[in-house]
Amino acid sequence: MRKGSIAALLGLALIAGGVATAVALVPTWLPEDASQQAGRIAFTFWFVIAICIFIFAIVAAVMVYAVVKFRVREDDFEDGPPIHGHTGLEITWTIIPFVLVTSIAIVSAIVLSRNDAQAKDTLRVDVTAQQFEFTFSYPDAGNVTSPVLMLPKGRSVELYMRALDVIHSVFVPEFSVKEDIVPGLVTQLHVTPTRLGTFPLECTELCGLGHSLMRSQAVVMEPAAFNSWLKKQEKGAAPSTTTSTTSTTSSTTPISPAQAGLMVFNQNGCSACHTLSAANATGKVGPDLDNLVSYARTAKQPLESFVHQSIVDPDAYIQPGYSKGVMPTNFGQVLTKEQLDHLVTFLVQSARKSGNK
Ligand code: CUA
View 1 (cartoon, rainbow, N blue to C red):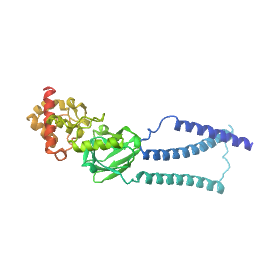
View 2 (cartoon, helix red, strand yellow):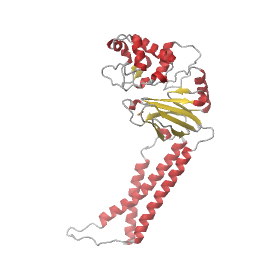
View 3 (spheres, rainbow, N blue to C red):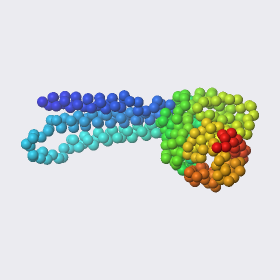
View 4 (cartoon, rainbow, N blue to C red):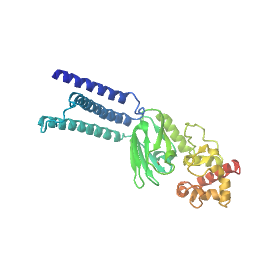
């Protein structure tokens, strides 16, 4: 009889544990690791899941067994016998959770401290977040900036992150690390990429109308390729880094002001919010820049000064149908005078080209 009960309990536990294990292992729950940190975090994750499956199997087995075995007869209306104070049982159900929870705490503490441990040659990257774009700059390389996070494979990287307006948060699922960026603070995030490739980098804090568009990429390159990219950026007047391809256009040929303006447009994430066919931009948050000619007419201003004003003082005139305070008001300080002139030239030219709609 007793032997039979134990066998039944064991069988039920195996079934419950087997089902739970299949649910844990068969679907792909986590993206493939692309950083040292991700491997450790995945280990912690599966360590906790294994404990959960173990507990679930025991609880489910005892519950199913009790429901079947101790079911009352139809005509039985009596209470069960009162039972309390089983010291052995109480000690058992205190010690087991204590051991399990403590082991999770120890594993997590080790993983956290290892994940934050910087190597000697840690690369510093400054991250600026604002509605609705990230800018990455490399202070050890003449503050080269990029709209995409370029990283060398296998090197420890520390991100120093600042927000210009509201709270943002940076997350690369393949790296498994994530950190908020809070105005007034410099938050840090440490990562050591281990796999070549281009991974999505996204803002994971609701930060305004364009939040869902606040996305960039983390590109992990071979260290040699990364160094030559950095050198090239440092030398040239920061040739545009198109987001999808690692373009290797030579930066030796002089470029026109309008072309320079397109670079300013791309580097400052304008495409996240604006549509502009000349830049292949399809953002929908802000006014459609293909219609600048007609907007300027509505605003009763000459096109050029209208465009200039809309960049440095965006709230001065609001196109009907759009909201005040969405466009960052700091471009007057962020852009150099030259960059601003190029951007205006580019926008005016492309607006004229896209027809006086
Ligand atoms: Cu920035 Cu959401």
